[in-house]
Length: 101
Image 1 (cartoon, rainbow, N blue to C red):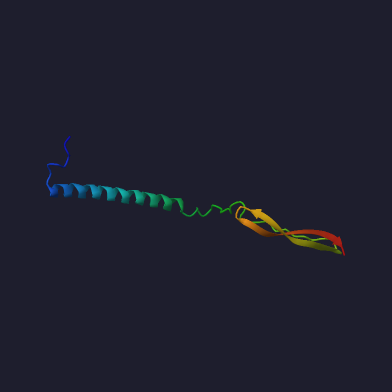
Image 2: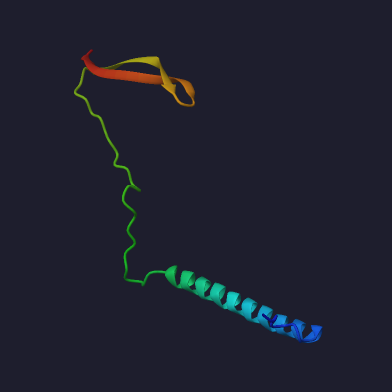
């Protein structure tokens, strides 16, 4: 088998290589430009009449507790050792209930 560039002069090889380099770099530039343009099109603002909705879970509902008069909340808290793969962890726990005051 013969080498394709065996009979070529060093200048001819260099010229062929520079043409290949130019082709590769131009192709990469075109691909990156196309990717940038597609991202820019995807991020265009919505039309003036379109509504913007928040994603689900972005707003947490507010919970209000209005107990009847003369009720008080009593709580007991303590610490529990939890054994985890990363090591033992001291974890707080709490239990609360309503009592007549």
